[in-house]
Length: 446
Image (cartoon, rainbow, N blue to C red; front, side):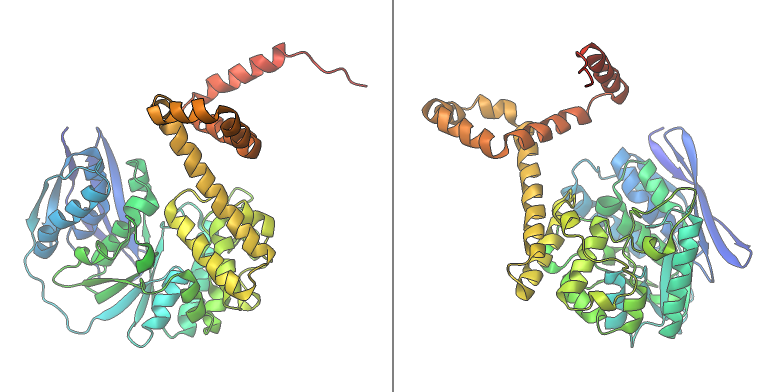
């Protein structure tokens, strides 16, 4: 089949929740994409399903055929969305989208202004910035907390409801498996799909809202291709709904400075998604897992708060900054590097010679070294065959390799081997290692 088919959506009410679902036929199988909303009304069209499926169809290079109506404005901008995404990620092919344009709705003048709200630094910043304008907040179950993680969902929902109540704001809660669907198609949540999933939820809620803010992840100084982006997010807007990407004027330290002025934010701030203190079977120690304080995102947020002088006032972090863990943070892409660099500059202003400054610099150095090793490993064949390399080795052989190996030799060897091991069959690797250990001479015990 050279198409991805979306069935006509079904709409119902279950236990007071408004439900929309559509069956997706892809790669010979079927998948039910579903949204459950705590309060209606919701849009009775296919806009949300288009947003959730477009990038998966582009990744597969398949025509997307939708048995349902789509906003005419959205159909017009789909080409621009694809143009941008294809330039960022050439492996995502531009495709045809087959759907019927919907007829104009009766637009209700009295609509709310909303903001996606996870309790994190970005969403609190946008909420506080536009507090006089925003009339409702929106929390998505299934975005950074999996739907089957009911214990964590219940805990977070309770805390966000409490915060919204203190700010005199209603909260709309939405459950969706759109994140699971995009992962199943091989998409990266941060780089490919999370912005379109948020846009899909916004489109579903368009009968309630005239404008919805998507809080930014990055500042204007650090804009790289990303799933949610000021170029992309507004393009999901329709005749009935304006989608706004907000907050790029501030980096995370500057956002922390704004939320430092809100007691509600400091009592509720939640950034953790890795949950390094998970005990299995949906069992948590709530004192540490709301924010585990150990993962990369927790650590960098704690440093944000420390840099603006309010870490001790933020009650959702129960532990102090672990300097060793900061140095060992595993950042695996440049967007994460930017946050570490911003933190380094901010902490230097407080104490230029502190252990925290040294740890942040060590983290940056480790990341840069890993990138260098991966580049060397990827281009090793071309490198050693180049005339420039031969000349360098012939003229400076002894000095070059003594300094190279003396400084980083063991570490570089380990990193290169790690890259090689990634592509190996894990069972074959395990069997080979066991065989080696069996034939090695055993050390006699004293």
